[in-house]
Length: 136
View (tube, rainbow, N blue to C red):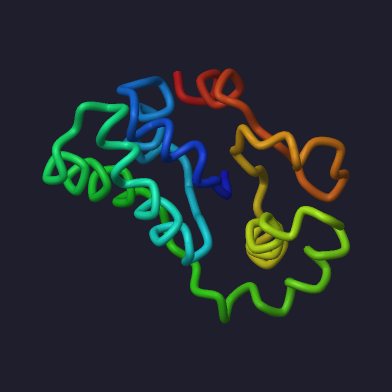
């Protein structure tokens, strides 16, 4: 199962040793994300370390552990879908990269906590409860 993962899921997994972190560190699913995600997460590094109590070194180690199971997709692989993604997301321009990547790689689901994707018929959302069912 190919699942596109949103930065908010990874950030929450970095902050708290949660079920999401457990899912992300297992090799059960094929997780993918657009290439800007590392930059996005690093923008919040100070916040994550403060909220989680992680040192900078622990943060880096946890990033390696989590991203060992997430394939980073370069822009060249999804850029042809940016216009279609913009149509789908309308005013939510910040999310078009995720949608373009989702479409380009024919993902099964998007794992996000972002309500901007609700009611978008082109995108199937998966939540943690469903992932835990598969993850047994």
